[in-house]
Length: 266
Image (cartoon, rainbow, N blue to C red):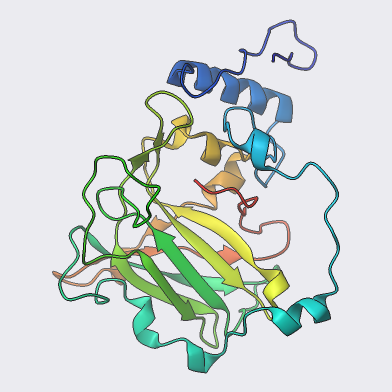
């Protein structure tokens, strides 16, 4: 299909499938989509043509409204007793040291008024240093690290802080188009006081050269909102001869809330 930019006679490049689309064509589609959006949206576009699978996987019908109290009767229950502090260190979950750059990722979970969200369940999952997930559908030719599963969780403290020790993930190829690569990222999931308050998003690393080429990152029209997905390096968090430290705060509500995934992975 093809469309036109508002107020312009320039044709947006035809949307091609993953087998034929090139990075240049994807870049043109991203630029055209941003021109139409005017850079005002702070959440990912549901149907973002350069991100191919969003056209098939985003909701097209009204959601079914559920009674929150009824949902809570069958939803998982997460309490402080069920989350072991050791689960927040992804480097000690197996018999040996995982391969890669050891890092600390920490920050605060806040509401729109800057107040800490206490005892918040925070879960992460990620690829290993070679860009490989421990998943049967991830079969690209990168090594699996037997000492790294890539999954962790913790509870925020009374000031809203979370803290994970892990390995910096690598970029990896995906099938959106030819020579498509995802920037290095960590998936985050956060639960509020109820299971129905779950938020899923991604954290990126500063200075990644793939930002401008990635349709998932670029599906958020507003640059400032995209910037809120990028952690910052903080030298005071780094530990001598041990790891590098990154800080990434999450804002759950309000005008500066952290952009969240629209239930489509990547």
